[in-house]
Length: 429
Image (cartoon, rainbow, N blue to C red; front, side, top):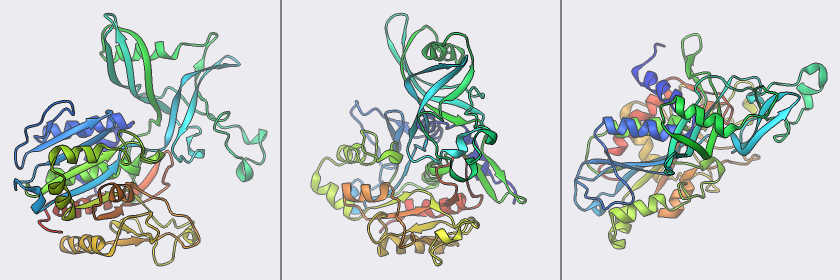
């Protein structure tokens, strides 16, 4: 299975996005190249029918949209796709420096529901956002990325823990501090950040005041398998959906209102100023349609697709799936259904997606969690409850969700994009 231009660009995007801030920056760059204009939430807006715009909040959430060509969006509503920019990871603590037995380490905090075992013995780097003061006293906010391996978390030898393969539990406080080197005196981590900022081209860095930094695996995204059937990468959940949504929006022709919203903080509950349970999308809608009656009429003929990866049936753990609802990699996108509203799909929104997929010749799968297991959730139910908009939960099937390195089918991302592009153009739902 040869590399497609779609997957080549996907791999480039994944490698450029080691943190939510880098992901939003990469998306903003692509939107700008495509002719979309960035707006500030602080400014007044003058919007043109059919034109493309985007806003960023916290540097880690983004809303991109095309204005409807009809001056009254209440007639046709909005076609919305939602995803999230964050992924489970290890984050650097505010006062992280540790010095033990002559080794320099950084304390970490677990962000989200991470699988912890795969973090051991990896070549790790650091990326995220840094706030610093220059020599004149002005504050700046910059992205930072060490790019090369600067840390690792060594495993304890099995000789010192004979039960490691059967019963070792990971203590996040004591087992996970990352090893950065050897030092007689404990280095100042903020000073190391200042040096890195200077190396990346920032001038006049006087003091690093604060940061939000992620450890990440330096190994890049790649197609794997005898015939390159799979894509292996960090952060497929859910940068894969962010990229698919972005490509679909850019490929769509202007017509009805088209919206892509990618929120931060989904992995920790979404309740933040930039999260899906926060006010960002609602405030954006209120700015575009300040009249409540018009806004409610528009939402009644709108639809949201929440795109977040689905659990593919693992060949070694097939019993973890309902026999009739085990999605296969490279067999098409997955509609996610839960009667208890952990997913927001219903028969009407599912039918619209199935109809569009049939028109594009794209197969569709279904996922329902086993009745004796708990079910995860997405931004879909949150958005449906906040806005009252009909919503569908879908995703690309993957393995190893929340691991430091995940696996998806190499044909599924482009297949989903082929459905989302006509969805953005759908005249009526």
